[in-house]
Amino acid sequence: MKLDNSKKLFVSGDEAIALGVRLARPHVISAYPITPQTIVVERLSEMVEDKSLDADFMHVESEHSALSAAMGVSAVGARAFTATSSQGLLYMAEVLSYCSGGRYPVVMMNANRALALPWSIFGDQSDSLLLLGSGWIQCYVEDAQEALDMIIQAYKIAEHPQVLTPFMVNLDGFILTHTYELVDIPDQSEVDEFLPPFSTPNQMSLENPMNLGFSSTPADNLEFKYQQHQAMLNSLSVIEDIDAEFGDKFGRYYGGVLETYQTDDAEHIMITVGTITGTTRVVVDKLRDAGKKVGLIKLRYLRPMPEQALIEAVGDAMSIGVIDKDISFGHEGTIFTNVNSALSKSNQTPKKHNFICGMGGRNISKNDIIEMFQLLEDSVKGKDIPAVNFINLNTSIQEKE
Amino acid sequence: MKKTKDMLSPDGTRPVKQEFPKRNHISEYPTGPGFTAGHLAEINAGWRVFKPIIDIEKCIGCYKCYMVCPDGVIFKTGEKAVAVDYDYCKGCGVCAHECPVKAITMIKDERD
Image 1 (tube, each protein chain N blue to C red):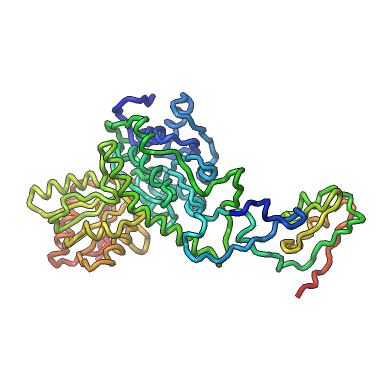
Image 2 (tube, one colour):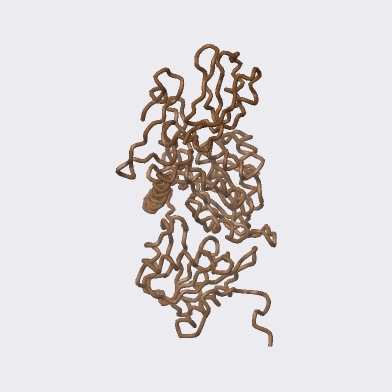
């Protein structure tokens, strides 16, 4: 399929990413294919082949090399893109911290997919959540339009002089990567106005030779890490500013670090990340029609963790639920841990419950989410509900008589 | 930032370790580990037991030792001779092993 420059195209989430990348004019794409990301790199290689994208496509032999190459590209002051998923992201993990510590603002698409074992090509968010501490900005999108738009925003945020931090755009595997929708394609000229060419103080050059990516003794190491942390915190306001600027130019605002839905007077709030937001929004409408005061917070970023915005959005709700498509074995869902930690820094004391579901590609239905809201209501009414609940297990977990 | 050419020894053969003065504010640090070479390096030869001694009379200027030194501490000193930067030599002995005319011998390093 040829992705032309029409104003609107009926495309998959993966194809929307490829279109966004083309508009961002990267100099080099270095990527290794993996389900369900493959279509991204297929489309990009076709675009390079048909010369509609003036970039070099590096056929690397692994994900580890894909990101290593992208980091080198960024180090000479050029714009790099890579994409991966699941085990591929874990294979890249060593390079993730090199890239963030070196302050190379590479942009990556990650198709959220389950981790082995049991081996599975289907979606959940275990892969990227395992790497929250890798120093990358992590954004999670809900639909193909947001996926395309966030690639354009991602470069602008990552390359901002106060940020200079690599950026991971996460799409739920199959649910978003392989489903089709009508997507608005921005004009190249408008994207060029919005996204200036990349420049960095940290550049390899013959005029000003530098030692790049060196080691440091204990005497200086902590200062570099502090700077990295500060840059990530700086990105909180940069994300808001750039989202507003994007909205003014292209007519689509995403709410910055998070989006709220029906939270103003909500007693029970569900916190979602990625595509499950859409289903939850439908459930909120349905429950509102039945007179229930329920709402939704779509967390768009997990790094930086938008603590203050989250505290304000939760307000004085009586309970919050967190949907996690992952489990940190022996503890709880990773998003729950992060949300809990943020809320612990305020005086709010809502009931807090974690719903583990959708792992390995299992569907999360509207009825599942209705059940979660019911558990929140029961908890507020005094019923003893566990903090961590597995939703939709297909067999009994009660102790046998 | 100093240029690399301004950081050589007076005879121009070796880079000289540069002091990275204590920064008073975090903003004075470079953005990530990228800076003019020669800074943030420490003199590093403490684990050496043996050190190479080059007999300049025997040296034929083939530069094999210069090529094989894993730490780049052997340098040219004029037309047909080499010397060792003992601040960074680890004492591995590869140079002595490879020298075709046995001009390099490893002797016990008598430092404290």
